[in-house]
Image 1 (tube, rainbow, N blue to C red):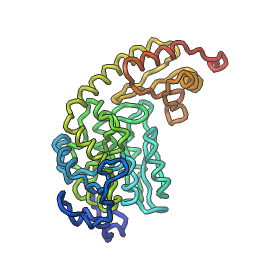
Image 2: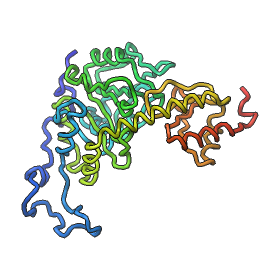
Image 3: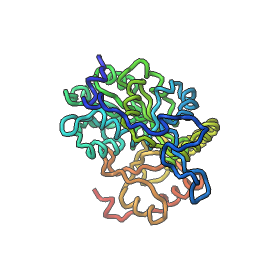
Image 4: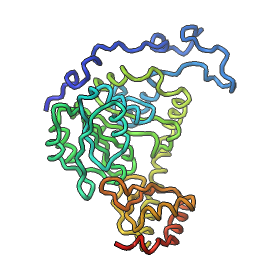
Length: 357
């Protein structure tokens, strides 16, 4: 397989001159700053929000690199993983001409971003047990297929993909393979960041929103070759991550061991929740999970979802998603939250007509 980023990129991207911000031209921390037209008198809150943040989040990358086992030049940080998805579409896919390959059921933002950018979508469904079909996937590729998105552990099914199947796709596809590992911290599978140097066409996405508990801050990670990361930095907005967000992430990285404790607690609760759900008569199947949620097949899913919502217990009804008929996606909560869920599901009585075939 020959991966040539220059052939894969939209032609005009190669000649773009990036916007040069004030903090690109001077990155020092001390001095009289009269270069960026900032307000010199701070903010109405009294806090120092008046200065622009580091556009490339250097401190975060320096501290994150050893945690993830990658070079800091292999890291892109975005306003959630959604920003990385959008930038990849804009960098590699010509609107109205190129396509991306999606593997439903999968994370919905790949399709949304492709549609916004006028990128065609090709689909190859997963198997009944939510695994990849490498042969069919590679057969679906054409000359205009630029990106294949693989979610592992998968959302909404929660399972990890067979590593050998992902390897087959990486070796057989000349375009970009994006592996979305938003839930990797809850899996026993090692991250594909360990294989970045082996596959030049690999990009791995992760997030601070799940295991790190920073969903409100909106910060996602992408790991790839320095060559690919340079492209993302070239076309991103100049100050895509706020200074306040950067400060909070840096503080979190100083307490990375806490993440392991939280993950262990969630995994314990996931096991307890799964065992308890199996005892509820309306639960038909619980799919294996390597994430912080369970995909649960139930009788009368829509009716149960409505009932739970009335009880102020909010889950996701995934019944209309490919291969997920009558399925609810249930996030693993605290012990008390899970208890309330189980009590409500046990008390739910569907209408008799709903249960008729």
